[in-house]
Length: 254
Ligand code: ADP
Ligand code: MG
Image (cartoon, rainbow, N blue to C red; front, side, top):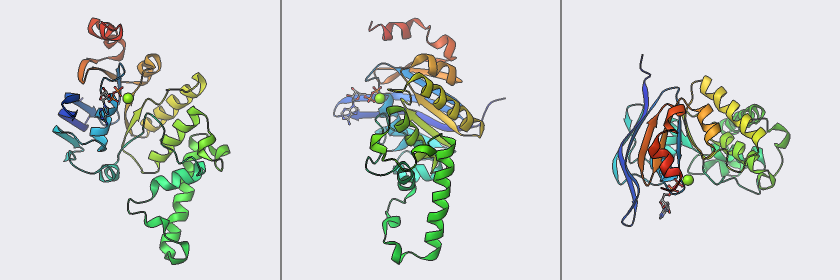
């Protein structure tokens, strides 16, 4: 039995000047899958995410999400289809509370929700109230309810990573790209983030996870890819891919 392909990346290239940060990368993600991506610093992992999510559109190649060509779609439209990403460096609004950060993530790109409440129609206010309940449900799920009204700038590194996840969950995603969710996170919270990812995956959300923390990535992923200098170096079962001599060599700086 083969899983339905959710995301299909074909020969995607992204260059900066003459330098190919991502050089002809192809991959597929099945519905319900968790794919891990490892690779040394500068391998092009975050740039690949930016090409898939749309912040740095591909210069060449195609990206299909659930059968639709999204190669040149702006990020907010990809998000509407259910394809979202988090960032390596959390992008929280520091002076907004945790709850407000989740609410802001659900605001539409025209910023209509920022209109003075006085002018809002009743249905818009009701919609806002529903979003607030949804944000609280997500905060509960992520074990962040006790910091609901704390300014996000004062959170620990791990809590900020959870807020990042909470922000994308506001968008009802079908596929989440996580960029280094364990970086700067203590081991207890790493386990907690892994548990939440597994739970969301159990609800049918597919994941691609970039991570340097190979132990945690191995245990989380169904399949793994290792990138090096813009290309895919090895791909396969997490427990064998890291033993690949080419991977070992890349990690040893050979
Ligand atoms: P990784 O996430 O695997 O560490 P990145 O995708 O962040 O790697 O970067 C890959 C390469 O592309 C690096 O050499 C980096 O310096 C370069 N790069 C990334 N973003 C830009 C940019 N906006 N402008 C110029 N070069 C960039
Ligand atoms: Mg990166």
